[in-house]
Length: 102
Image (tube, rainbow, N blue to C red; front, side):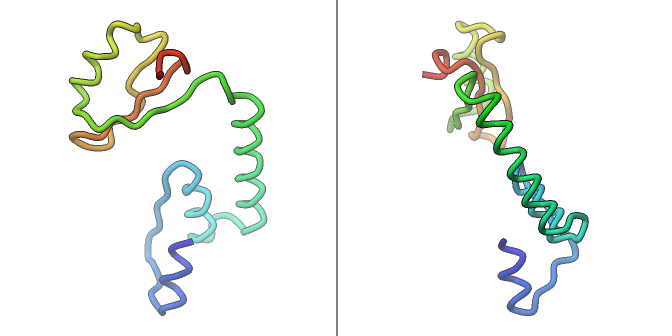
């Protein structure tokens, strides 16, 4: 992980943060999880996603403001596609049915 690169240079982080699967790595770096437990968590999470969720939906990153994205999505209906995350002023993630995402 990036934390290990910094640690090898003598820099020890006082706080680590992760996003999505990176949360597991952050917990290992912070000492909250053993490496083996973190690896098990990654494997279980990946298996759940691949086995139970694959093909049922998806996500797309859109480089537009959220209000513009919401306006364009309204024709599909919120039950088929919606804004999943707003990462910045012009960085939105949309999730929903594969056909609606295309």
